[in-house]
Amino acid sequence: MSTTQTAETVSRLRCIACGATPDSAGQDFRCTACGDLLEFYFPGWTSGAPSEPAALKSLWLNRRTSRGALDQSGVWRFRELLPHIPAEHAITLSEGNTPLYHLPRCARATGVENLRAKHQGMNPTASFKDTGMTFAASSAHQGGFRWVACASTGNTSASMAAYAARGNMHSLVLIPDGKISWGKLSQSLDYGALTCQLRTDFDGCVRILNDLVRQKPVYLLNSVNPYRIEGQKTAAIELMEQLSWEPPDHIIVPGGNLGNSSAIGKALLEMLEVKLISRLPKLSIIQARGANPFYRCVHEFGGKKLEPMTADTLATAIRIGNPASWKKALRVLRATGGEVEQVTEVEIAAAKAEIGADGIGCEPASAVTLAGVKKLRRSGFVKPNDSVVLILTGHLLKDPDFTIQFHRGDLFADTPDESETARAKSLQRAPVVLDANLGAVISALDAAERNS
Ligand code: F0G
Image (cartoon, rainbow, N blue to C red; front, top):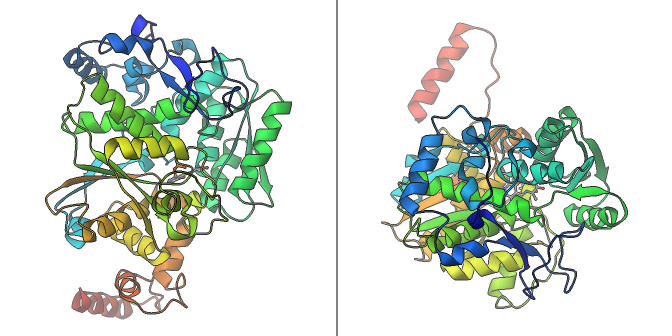
């Protein structure tokens, strides 16, 4: 139950660009020498794994039967691979422990037989953010902060507000006015955050927050905070455990601010380093075409620069034009040999409905993964016999407006009838309004049976 510090869990901060190793991070979590991002590393691992890999695996498995709060968390269960935070500061909602599902219909539609989804939307606040937030909010608690804050497209803010509430801290949310889903906004209100809807986009919210943390004693909980990345690593560790430590050929993630891809990639590299796995999956990142700065960074600028853009997509979670973690993401993309793809709005909507039709569902930003695999399959990067795991980042109920508009046919009313639009239309299941009589319902049932 306790977290003990050993030589192996001693972590240090390091700048990803100039390699400086500061003893602590400033309010903005940027390197004071060059301004780039910081990351954790574990000097003790150079002499080998934190423990024997087999011993670690059985320790983590045994914790599943423990009643200890930390052991029941799918994040803290793997604490040997995380920086040390004393147990009395841990704020947990039993996050992680998310299911790995087969997607048989999506597999048929994609031409990849072995297609699975790790559903991070099955976390306590219904998105993957909880795995990073439990850890970073705990570090805020350890630092004695009264206020925590983030800029967000809705999921980070929902998660932060929940964990701040559990840790008796106040939370300040900066979100773009009118560009996040009601489901997410309603969460931060209910969890008691001070919620400011700014008349700007996500990138504008980030700029204001960065200035704010330099003036006020507020703890920054965006994914530039390296504790967030450490917590989010555990999704990949848990995934490998679910696959009996046999890595898939591909892991596919959506790309927005690029914290999640960086975290999953970091976990894969570290698991290889400490011999928990013996080979690396290829980690590929998918962006919406209207919010594709990383796609352009890789395909137009050879990874040399990232040109910020004004982003636009109905997948509002990834409506981000200036991703903070692009250098970290580029590094793991290259280290694992992954690809970057972009997908259209119609492709996202069709993929979302297909994941729904498998009885799973997700929010629009998560569906870029399936849309991306289809493209990677067509380009030959993903082979029919490859094993593929999609990381679904948010729950279907995060954005019901999108889903209802899609099924009613209102989402792309003016889009030309290209093949993907036709495919999307075939997935639409508009609600049927009927008179309240048995005959009308039986007719509807018979018609549906004829069309099935
Ligand atoms: N999927 C969902 C559902 C998200 O909420 C986000 C990011 C992403 C994917 C992209 O992940 O930023 O790590 O590349 N949402 C952030 C937020 C930005 O504020 O909730 P990323």
